[in-house]
Length: 326
Image 1 (cartoon, rainbow, N blue to C red):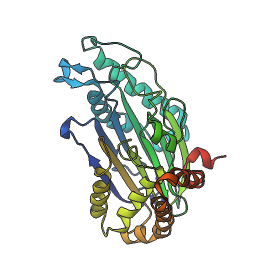
Image 2 (image 1 turned 60 degrees about the vertical axis):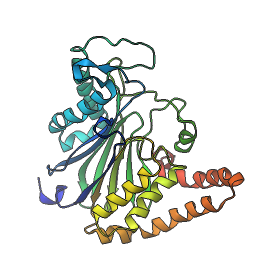
Image 3 (image 1 turned 120 degrees about the vertical axis):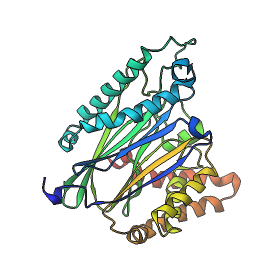
Image 4 (image 1 turned 90 degrees about the vertical axis):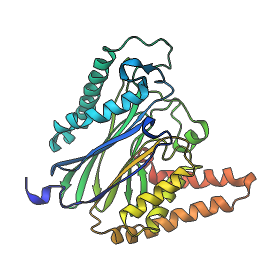
């Protein structure tokens, strides 16, 4: 592989924000691999506690949701080791490959366990979500991003032109948009599990560098007033930082103040060169999003929801991948 076709020189850094209110019992986890020159991966996994609350004596009385997330993250490197950059040319097959692999892994451990003592349509053996971002080099100044997901964890892009773009689509009943889902908290319509078939969805696009690729569990964005607030917190943390570590810490502090769940976010930066360049490059977008938040906060309580929906109508068409394709 020619040097200019690799990702080695394009990757600036990887940042991690992780919060577990219950410590090591938390059901979020993650995996990443940036050691290869042909393809990079970041991924987050979130155990579905409601559906997977059954505790397994075979796993030290841990819940099925906890075991599922840990097992999926732990086995992810084995699956990824068999993936090559050229496989991203067939994203549907790639999604099917990951789904088959992890389904077989979870069904294998299910076969080692005694049957659950509960049943019902909402109950699952070893349920969790997954959001995976695979990045390869497309052309000299472009990267090809392939996003795979099941459930309501998400893959996002961050660029100077568009800001924070939600690439994946949540598996939620009724198919609410991101704002409506914050209001209604719709249940999941699909998730990784060991009982029934599930579908790994895929999205793909060529990105002009510089850009950031993010994977986030729902604890990062699911407790905020609007989708705009997630981008604002991200960019506000950036603007107040001079190093990646400072940004990680400020981002975490802001999320911890509002979240009611485990929260995990991996962020990979490509093509910025320096952190200062990253911060200066996102300044204009930050000012735009801050303007949205200022308008919301300035609105009287009785009229705030109307202002939110007006801003959301404009914001979503530039930051939701499906909306941008219309």
